[in-house]
Length: 122
Image 1: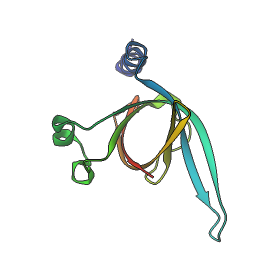
Image 2: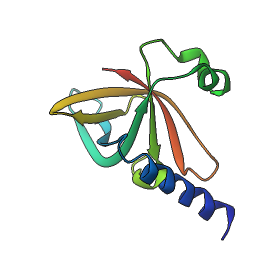
Image 3: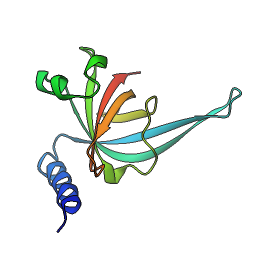
């Protein structure tokens, strides 16, 4: 088993072990036609929401963007078919309440097994 396969399997194990923290969500890509029309294309994703800790901030490539009210989102790369870009959205439904976040920044590993996202309430 190669390093990529081990990394992908590790991410799946994390999401199985932390299944109580995993939320069903949507990665939403908004496209604009250049005039005044825009459309949204959603894809189902699994998301773990967390707060940024000091060690996250110290080792993050986007540490200078993190604000105290921001949320960290973890999404397995296998769930993402559409390209991840800043200004895309992540929506999570919790107890019939929908939270919508803008992806402000993100980083991933060389195999794109896990995406760590800087999410800001929209």
